[in-house]
Length: 400
Ligand SMILES: Cc1ncc(COP(=O)(O)O)c(C=O)c1O
Image (cartoon, rainbow, N blue to C red):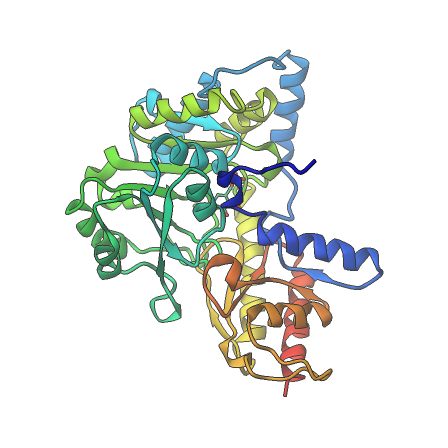
């Protein structure tokens, strides 16, 4: 018997990242020496004080169902973090906890999109943005943001793409995969456009908010345009900052009607997030960020090493990331060249395949809606990043 899959599930696919990662595993199992620059998760371990809180929670009996919108103490901690660190005030009823930032985003679209509603997605994008929109019946509308504009959305582009059907704009800063961070002036200019279109909601994905380089200040659209707070959904979580990707805890802060609807969707899918994960996240949000400077310094060092290794390679143009876990590199200059085995490089997928032959795994820009580019992770050991930079330079040099 063949199982007929729904139209809905046929509109989305498994992430390119997962596919790239399983190829790395395959090659490694076959004995190949591959440096894996595909992953978007910290190579650091979860800080010990957070793990201890989780053990204590289990021992103390925090092993039962949790309230759907999240454990109250954690929601209060998020509320306090937003007030003290982000200078944003939210009533408790506006804050909802889920199984990762990803679930908040998914639930927000499930709660607000009707068929054919449009969501503006600046490219390059994190692939779950458009797939989450598609799964929930909406239409992603892509806005290309190339190298010349630092992979950031310009106000004129925003104005041009808004229609009567536009429900959301997605803004992700620091960005995955670009590493772009919007300045206060850039955000103010976007806010000007948004004020002219009050029907448009804004999804602010600030999951990488603490992973910023060169002392860049944290900056949210909401800090420069507090009048937009009642139509923004701020999305954050512990995955990247606290090296807690596997604990699956994220939060959303937005209008109460939206927070409630997100919780309704969650109540019919996963119910409240894990009790142990929430206890760990509570420790994270109340335990201070002392460990973070060391992590960010390591990411910045790796960024510097990789950028330096690639910036003089003929055929590559590096967008120097200002935050996040990735170096995003334009590789248009390699197209049309020929590998030593005679194969021609026609697109960024071919570049990725060639680099894999030469021992480095990255992900093609096509997975993020912008080609021909490459995404290389700096959330991996410094030595590996340095060696990957050397291998990429050598591999590019072998192309005729
Ligand atoms: C931009 C962006 N948003 C959201 C997520 C999902 O984060 P979480 O682990 O909290 O679900 C990721 C993870 O890679 C991401 O890169």
